[in-house]
Image 1 (cartoon, rainbow, N blue to C red):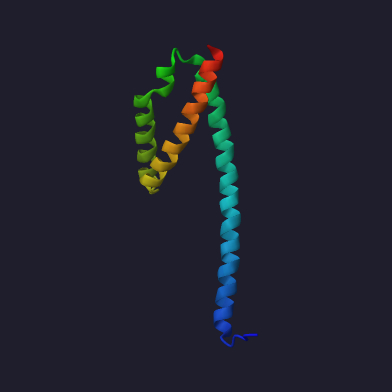
Image 2 (image 1 turned 30 degrees about the horizontal axis):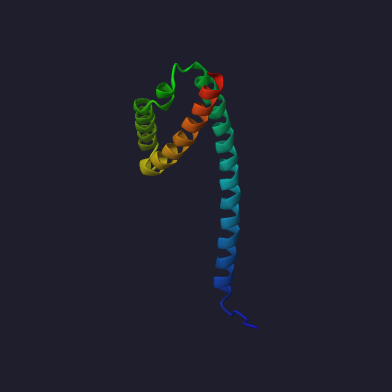
Length: 108
């Protein structure tokens, strides 16, 4: 059995573990807020899917790029990495476009 004699290091390691645990709790709380917002976005997308004239209007690549540019600009204003925001939004928009196409097709 190894007995550490560097008590300062042990205290630092324990403080780091406690801080990491607190950060993880905070991340979980943020994730719950994000999931709630995704749910709100999903409800809106389902409504939009019933209002579109055709599947091309659902895909709307021009609208997608305007959304991406808007969220990147918002990220920059808030000193958030716009590349992370763009990657996240591209994945999210792809998933929501697939959902909206399903809703559109089910209604037509």
